[in-house]
Structures are given as C-alpha cells and as structure tokens.
Amino acid sequence: MTISREFHPYRSAFIQERMMAKNELSKGEKASKWRKTMYDASTTFVNLKNHDEFESAAVENNVFSMVFPNLKVIKEETLFPCEIFDGNEAWIGKDTTGKYKYFTGQPYDEAVAYSIFDLLLCFPKVEGKGYTQQRQFVRDELINLLNVSYDNVDWEREEKEKYIENERILALYKNQDFQGKYPNLFKKIKSFVDVLENMLIHGQKFIDLEKRNDENSSIFAMYASQSKVSSARFSSAVKRFRELGLLFAEKRKVTYFDKNTRSKCLTETTLYSFPHYSESFFKELEESLKRNKAVKK
Image (cartoon, rainbow, N blue to C red):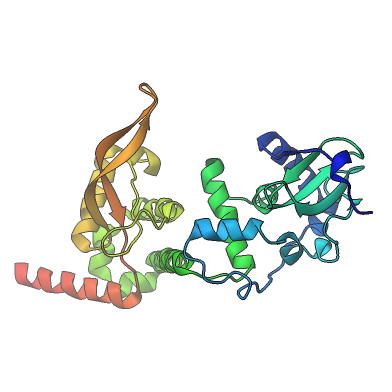
C-alpha cells in the first residue's frame, strides 16, 4: 500500500525516540532481523571531499536498503509491518526536505522519522561518550559498511591503524622476549607502561581531521585524572616518554566552553601525539640507549 502524506504526519526522532528503538533492538529476535551487512557503494558516493559531504550524500540516498538486508526488497513510499515496534506500520521515503528516513508509527497516527544515523545510534555497542562521539562512531561505521573512501577517511583510517599497531607492539612489552630484546628500554618504561597504555586508549578517541599537528598526526589533550594516576606520576611518565621519543607534546591555544560565563574561552594547554611504533622503532631506541649507557661508563 502506497502511503498518503495527508494521513501520515510525522516528527523527527530525538533522544527519547532513539532510546525507545534501542530498547526494542536489544531484544534477541529483533536484533537478528536487523543485522548489518557490507555494501559496495563506492561508485555511488564519489567525489566526496569531507565528512559533511558524506553525511549529506548518505541521507540523500536510500542507504537503509544497502546495509539492512531485511529492507532490501522494500519499495519506497510503501507501507510494511514495522520490525522495530510491534503493531506499527512503517515506510521508507523522503521527508519534506528530501532526506531519506525510516518512518514508523501506529496506523493513522503521527509517525517518527529516523535518519540512517538516528537508526544506527539505536543499536547496541555504539561507542563514545555523549552524542557527538557516538554520532562520529556511527558515521565511521557507515563509511566502512558502504566501502566509501575520501581524504578524511583515508587519514583517519591510517591514524586508527597506527594506534592499533602501537597497542599491539606495546602489548609485547609484557612478554619475556621483549625484555630480552630491549632490556634498556624495558628498564626505562616499566614503571609507566600503564600510563602509556591509557594514553593510547584515550588518544584514539579523538582522531579528528581538524585536530592534527604539522606532522599530520592527530593530537589530543589528557590530564592525570583521566589516566587515574597522580599528577606527579603522570608528569614523570610524560617526561620519560618524551625523552625516549615515544610521545610528542606541544603547547597550543584551544577553545573551551566556560560553564560560568556560558561562553567560549581561549586557554593554553599541552596536546599530545604519537609516532608510529614498530619493532624496528623499538630496536633503534634500544640501540640508542645502549650507546648512551656506554658513553656514561
């Protein structure tokens, strides 16, 4: 049955509507229906320059049928039984601004319109603190599902791969082989490995094209409280990492929102970035420490 706009008013989905959908999609039988699959849309999403352009293009196309197999055969602007809310009817089509939405509601009642990003936010395992980070997470998820590529994405993927590799290399630190290969390096950082691990975990949450240094690496701020150690220990750890070249730091002026004045303010803070770790990188550090040790003797 093709829908009639006259009898199907709607409102946009906000946090309350997303939470309701999230509760439904956490149920086993519905979660199995709403599995996500890869779809090669690289020829559909072309000549994109940045995330804003991707997000605009994503809602201008029927992406629902691309990533959700249960919606693949659904014709646009046609009513079907909603698979999120029992008893609702649903349809996929454009809203009054030309953006594709998943509409759901009781027959002849006001429907709720979910964009593809709204819907992805309703699934379990969405990572991030707060709406902004979670929105970035589902955007990146959609980029991967659709096999889309552009400059922003390529840089972010490289940065994420760097962090993953750094974590993998650092995990070797706990093996006896590492201690045997790099005894001097092991001695230098053994008291602060937990701080370095926490900084790697924290830093990769803030990979953002607008937050990078002159060397094209992502930069982030971090404080002792976020590492769950004392200020003295955090400062000592950062100093040691910088001396070894395991971490870079620079002073920059950044804006922040002052809750008291309810305005944006400018302050200077320390921002950190990581080089790309590798076994050869650690080998060079070990050789350098060994030479310095020999000179001191």
